[in-house]
Length: 391
Ligand SMILES: *Cc1c(COP(=O)(O)O)cnc(C)c1O
Picture (cartoon, rainbow, N blue to C red):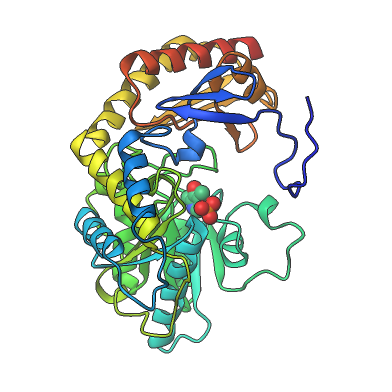
């Protein structure tokens, strides 16, 4: 089963080679079909090989792929208009990944600090968070495993427990160099951790009181996944900076750092850049993604599908003594077990469903937003079968 390749071994052993996809399904090179409850980690929200997205990519590929950001092209301008209208932010910097979107946000926060005379700016991030794999974003990440072996780390990050407003307040009291809070509305890699209602609102208030920037990392939660276009919208707040990526391009590599108010004027000519970021090809794909999310009302759909799937998962699995918790927000769902679920991914695959395990013992479901009711039931059944067989 094991396959030796020339790829650097950063992902461990991989036993499946996929050959094609269509909607919620993937086929491997042996012709087996799987239903995809992971969407390439919250990326392919519109499913695989969506015809309208394929057409948008093909058309743009045949027109103009890249010019560099020394020149304007139309798709990134239109995408920026769309994203600012959807988010309530006022401008956008396009990157090629989530980590890069967060790098832009971190640079905004630091320069904002410097503009106020703070020469050693500190950003508060949360324990259990995930913000990326670049040096700054892995330092921001609240998970020691991501950092081991990579010191010296980047300075300027302080960590607070997640879902604990007082802890953040306390750090602020004892540190006058704080310039920003960076937080995920729901921790994805951290195990689908959902904070109490009002958490983001309270962080917003703290930022207002202290003149800190509120940076909301919507790289996994954004683009409809949790039931609103951005998850912070369910709390009725407006961040200063929003980052997103994963679901934005349905597989085309694109990230975005959106900013508003005092954060929007921080980066000036020469302060930041990217050769590929916001190229016409990726932005044309993202424009089509947003079109479809809107025209097919996929935010609402993610919400209602999530409610139904979570209810059934709880009813079917809630009594098992090794199931610790089942939680979800839209189509971000986690089944936390008290036993190790190292084999769960393989067992699920044998049951015809693609899932992932995160934070050691949480089975994570991030299915596409385009699921039919039948497909949603099919995923729930296969996942239940998988979890039962683990006991
Ligand atoms: C995936 C993720 C990132 C990193 O995105 P990449 O595209 O892998 O660099 C950052 N923050 C959150 C919340 C994520 O889920």
